[in-house]
Image (cartoon, rainbow, N blue to C red; front, side):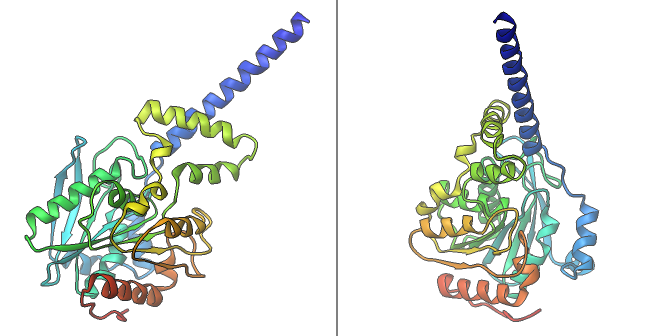
Length: 314
């Protein structure tokens, strides 16, 4: 009997150690995932003809290190090719950087607007130790917007566009911090970060997923002081007064498009949704450029009252 008890205790301890190790490993992967190299992004976007570096570098712009309230600098580019007071702030996704947003800069500048792109914390040339999927990132978005309003004219109007993590950051900013924007465009956001992790973990093991998720929660709380449950755009999206356009490819295998449906259904007031059939994660624009451009142009014209130029330009 004693030997059985010892065996049971050893089994329990080894199982606990295994799950603790998995939780620590998972939290490390979440906070410190590998970032894409700038040169790789340049090659990818250039080959796809979504970027022309010579043209991009010639655009009038100010490249600024904006001090974050969290103790590091945010690398931001304020791009102003148009004589207008209307700006779009663009937020990139996980592992990318502000150069990844060049295709959206082209989209919005051709519509007649100026643009802000910036590196999220820990990405590109911005500081920051870890990534938190919108929890701390929303404060940096607020800081970049405050810099825009303080330095580029008293009469500025702006909208915010975000994809993936950038979309979640956009919604968390809008629902928790500010209502200054004219509109928001959310491209492929998750609804709850916890559910997104569960979706990923379940693809490896349905049995172990809940336990690993629990230990991930504990380690993220201990190591980065943020909770999985506080990174939930769906919990605050009903507080957003401004119009929101939800975009999400139906074939998204990373963040299921049902997340955007959940967000759309929870959002009160003016809203629109578009779920293209083609494209995987954040490929809605890549695979459906004409429809994307027209959907965004119609949304901005309808809800912001902005005059949209060249909305069919390719």
